[in-house]
Image (cartoon, rainbow, N blue to C red; front, side):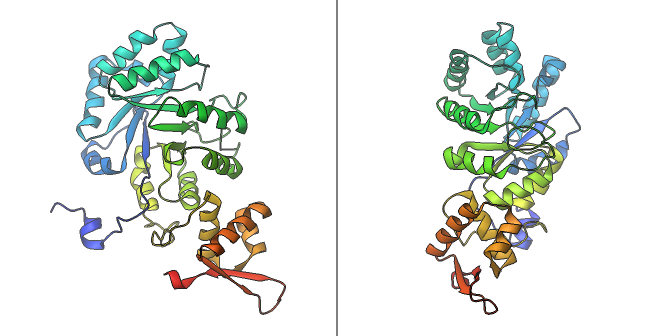
Length: 328
């Protein structure tokens, strides 16, 4: 039997939105090596976090990296490793060591310390000239030393100039008090919307270590959202969320309906599809969006013929929004 049970017997939908890259964080906990070949289809790359690489012998680290690579995965070190190398004046030696030991991806970050632009360019040139994938992480790890939203967008723009595979928005392992997450781990959607509106969407990866955060980002941004700092134990669960095969997303990710425009349009479509018929006040209560953004999204969805509007029979002053079932 060469096909997975899911595809052969359940006819799983493989026409979901393109993309949906997943970065797994390896913190040296137990890895289910026996199913890694199957999970590899759903893992874009593995990151051996922080400076954990320094705790293993070269032989043990190289063997661990090779196990992942044998399953077709890309493997990266944590960005803090090169931050430390820069501070100690050992960046060139460290880059060579990273390559020689088997990493096939390099990460630039400034989570702990700032890095001069010339050094970032040198690291990027090393990666590109040696056939290594380059990722750039934006954001600070210290909750008391956070970038503003304007600074985050600016840093993302600067990162784009280095031609990375992904631009990773810092989320830490806690998923709290950094970048798009508040002190309770709730998502700051105004941050997400602006980042997605002003950045190369296909390159943006949000670190989202908590499964609830992953579900919310999939629902609002679609199954093609790139997510990082996912634990190995959450990979399969996340993939079923992307495919709309768990209770949280079951049946809602209808890829036959293409919703264009900003992420807010997809979110409003989701609310109308799953809670409609519904009036504007009801949508505002469920989404927490500001009224102007909601009205713009409703206008665009109506213009595209994805939803329809009718007067409320009980109160002609109200408008009721529902799906345009003629598209189904």
